[in-house]
Length: 495
Ligand code: NAI
Ligand code: MG
Image (cartoon, rainbow, N blue to C red; front, side, top):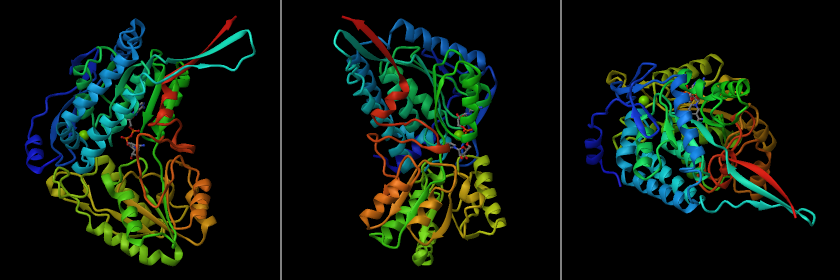
């Protein structure tokens, strides 16, 4: 459990210059220079982060390849791999407060959420995949007599993981858990603006007994390190979470190099749909508020569009605006804040620009939207509710990744489905209704990877998370994630 005095002492800790972890050895040299690490809490410089380059990426990939080929992990007994991953999860839990506070100083998420969603869910994810190590079976094909067709599940080799800044430990574990459980080696690149806690978590993997070279971290910019990973011929698969533009670029680089498989999780512009027959008005209001405003809207599955049945539109929107106005936005390391900081200056500018554009396009900013606490040097913003948003508007079509809710009324079920599907994304969505038939029709009609009914953002490692359409491909979490990290090999034996 977290208490304020422990948080207050952890937040004072000085942070040493950080950098790569290659072949088990930390390296803060920064061949591409040093990146200042800015805390969104107050805009102060926490430390520096080493930037890498293509040569360094090749060094990390070579270390990963050597480790993979000599079998120090890939051929370790599955039960022994399982024990290492469980020990790693233990260490993540033991260091949970330290990891959570360090991560918040770097990325600005409110500490209550960060504590649960970062070390908490990362440890749970590592445990889930620890248990997978010795439970992946091959198959025997139903062939005619006289021939044996065996299907082996082999690790792919070297996995490249490129992750974003919003939940580095959770999203990191979604990639690292299954990649390592299957026996692969990994090169991971955290976002340059949120690398500190992920680096610390990867150090703990080595304390847990993960052999050197199996898990390598290269820190730095997308342009210097991310590009080089996607184009490296020594990386077999890229798993990515982040923006659509970068996802496209990764696919291009894969096509230009070794045709590596690419798995992309690209966020969305997800619809949270409230029908007048919802079971509980207050629960639906609370669900709509947290769907968009937790972590300042910096959540891939955020319910950033609210579609409300016209007959209850005004009453429901008034309650959502009141809920938004009650949220305390402030120091993310103060347990009494509901919402922390916006991640960085660029994201804050993007959020404010989205609001100006919405107003220009004819929508109404009903609630919030002002920059807050500017004199303290940090990046904060009032949760904003925008009504009258039309399918042609930018705010309806494009992800903001900020605390900005776009509201659109609908008149019947078919219009709700049409509006829900009226942009290029397809990650998540929510439906609030007391009508079971309608709930199933909505689930069937929504072109998304995830739909929640009478809640928003239900999560568990046991169910897959992934998008359709331009929200990406492939799945994190659950046993389905394993597909990304194995190759099938068919072996025919003539009997
Ligand atoms: P981004 O997509 O630029 O960054 C994600 C990761 O990709 C980072 O590690 C970054 O260094 C790396 N990267 C950047 N350029 C690259 C390249 N050319 N090749 C390979 N890797 C590269 O996201 P950014 O700029 O931090 O945020 C911009 C927007 O992206 C947000 O406003 C939001 O709309 C979206 N986003 C979505 C996330 C999600 O959960 N799906 C998470 C973070 C951002
Ligand atoms: Mg940062």
